[in-house]
Image (cartoon, rainbow over all chains, first blue to last red; front, side, top):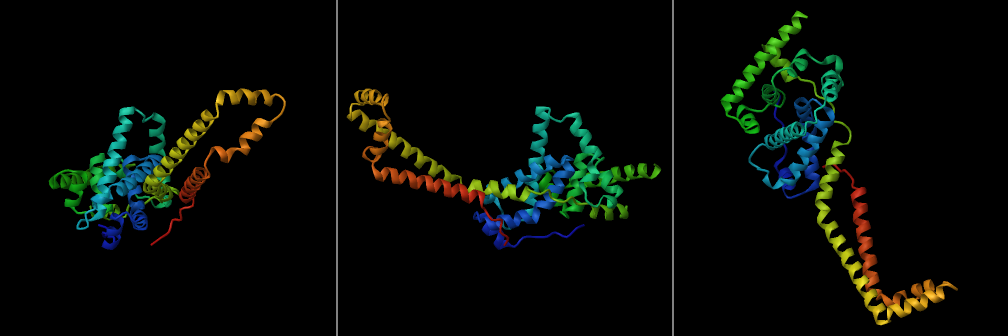
Length: 182
Length: 123
C-alpha cells in the first residue's frame, strides 16, 4: 500500500478561508492522483480532464465544508467519485456514448501512459474487471486508503468494501490466468 | 497473490494533461471576482441609464422635435448637426456623470486585465 501524504493544517485553514494560493497548493498536490483515478473510471482522457476540473472547482466552491480533523484526500476523492458518477449518469441519459468513443477508449488505453513498455499485465487486466471492484482496488492499493475511508468515499458498508477488494482480486487472477494461456 | 498486490501498488500513472491546472485556477479566479464584475456592470448600467435620462430631459426641454427638424434642414447643406452635438456635449451631459462613466469603464477594463494576467504562483 502506498503511504498517505497529507497537507499542512495551516494550508487547509487558509484554503477554507478562500486563499487562492492555498487552494492552488491543494490542486497541485492532488491533481495527478485525481486525474488518474478519473481516467481509470472513465477510460477517456477528455472526460477525465473535464471531471478532474469539475472536481476541483467543487472543492473550491464547497471549501467551507473542509473538515480540518479529517483527511482532506478522502473528501476530495468522495467529490471526484460522485462527479464521475454524475458524469456517467448524464452521458447515459443523453445517450452520448458513441461506438467510436468506446473503440477509441479501449484501443488507445495503453497510450495514456508515457512508460508504455512498463505497463504491467495487472494494469491492463484492471480495466476488464467490474467497475465497482476496480474502484475499491484503486482506492485501496493505488491511493492507500483504509477500508473505513473507502467505505466513506464509495458510500457503502466496510464489509462490502472488503468483499469488493477480495472479489476484484479474484477477477484479476482469473484474467491474468487467461493472459498466461495466450 | 503477493505479486498481484505488489503490481497493484505500482500501477502506472498518466501525466496530467497540460491546461487542467490553469483552467481550474482561471475558473476559481473568475468565481472569486464575480461579485466585483457584477458591481462594475451594475455601475456601468446605472451610468448609462442616468446619461440616457439626462440627454432625454435636456433635449425635451429644448423642444427636441423642432430642433431636430431645424437640424435636418441644415444637415442638407452642411455638417453643423455633428458639430453642434459634439460641441455641446458637455452642455448636455454633466462632466461629473461623464467622469464617473469613464472611471467605471476603466474599473471594468482593469478587472478584465486582472483575469487575463493572473500569475500562477506557488506557495
